[in-house]
Amino acid sequence: MKLKLRHIVAVFFTALLSIGSVGTAYAEDIKFSLEWLIGGRHVGFFVALEKGYYRDEGLNVAISRGYGSGDTVKRVATGSADFGIADTTTVLSARANNATPVVMVATFFNGGPEAILALKSSGIKDPKDLSGKKVGGGSTSASLKLLQALASKTGLKDYKTVPMASDQIYPALLTKQVDAITGFTDNAAVIASRAQQNGDDVVVLPYSDYGIQNYGSAIIVKSDRVAKKDPAIARFLNASMKGIAWALANPKEAVAIMKKHAPITDEAVALRTWEIDRDLIVTPETKKHGLGSVQQDRMESTYQMAKTYLGLEKEIDLKAAYTADFLPNPPILP
Figure 1 (tube, rainbow, N blue to C red):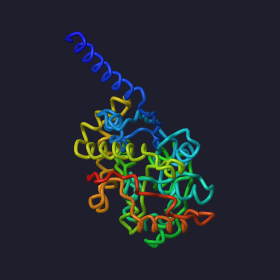
Figure 2: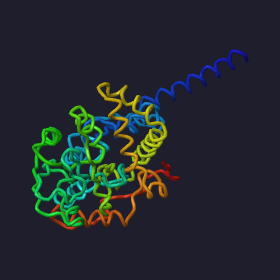
Figure 3: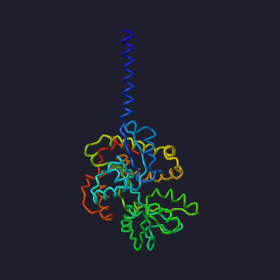
Figure 4: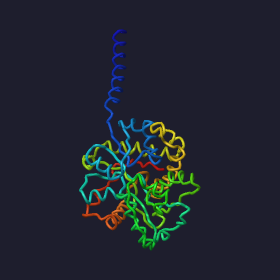
């Protein structure tokens, strides 16, 4: 009888070990594409990776840099990435102009990040100061195109836009080939560190300060995942929002975690970037509805702005372009 009992116990523990190894072996591989180079804005995702939040959800997540929102949208649509980060207006444009099958499942930047950035030495303190000036920006970037919306709100006239490749934007501003650039508010962290070496500084004029209240960056997936109610979506969002919440509460530690995965990270710049991004992530909406919140009224206003200023070729079914069905319940608050 003793031998039989030992045998039963041994088989039981062997089975437990086997289940554990199978759970690890069969974790779902997920490819997650960022919208641009790995930087301070992404610390929350690396926290989720390092602390095992993704693993706890049965996901084996690989994070890769992006090459612009438009490219990330294409990668998700073609299946070369499972999840991605892309500007909300870029997602709406892709659906309207090319019927691209991607869906927004959460906000990342709940607030609009678009801004004018200028050197302090330029004397630019208000959008109207750009009258008669050259404003550079990414040739395909929403921030440059949405400058028209800012001009309409503020009465700015007679400015000249200078579209350029993304790697030319910062040098053009720092060498004063242009008077200002369009970009995101958190770009100021990088520009300021370089400008200060020349005894200058950076001025930031957020579009949101002038009544423009669009959604910023979003987490996106391919439409067929949403249609089949893929459970990996909710698991990915739950882990990601937990990582972002932890990073908001522990910014220095979060930056140090990201540096382990991206060794060339400048920790001071990354920390300042994350501090700026806090205002884009922690908004009255996310305080009320939780991180990742997507609300119909703001989606409607973002869509109307995109139609007005981004030249959408066709009307779209807006309700098919986004969903809040996979967000954590109860919500994860910042």
